Length: 92
Image (cartoon, rainbow, N blue to C red; front, side, top):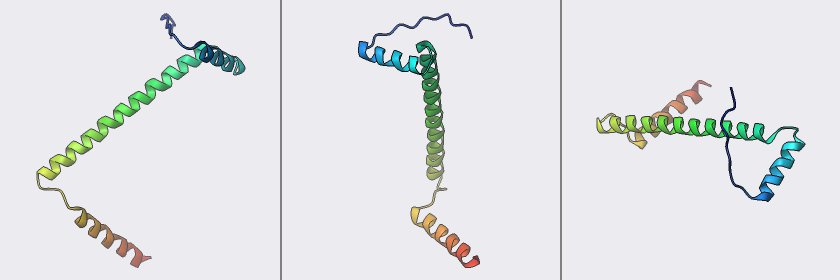
């Protein structure tokens, strides 16, 4: 991928010096490290947004289910799974 954009930023001189020293110690140019950090940030943000969208769809579906009268109370669910656990335990 061609590198045509320039990115300028302001930061504390001490942070810059420490960053440059760590990059040099790792034998990696600062620009390479920053590109990797940016890519990781973009990937994390996208994953978080995708998860939020997934979760929102699940909550919306559950709300529709409840308003359609298809939901069950916590007690009903607990009773069903207690019965399932008892069946599995008796088979073992």
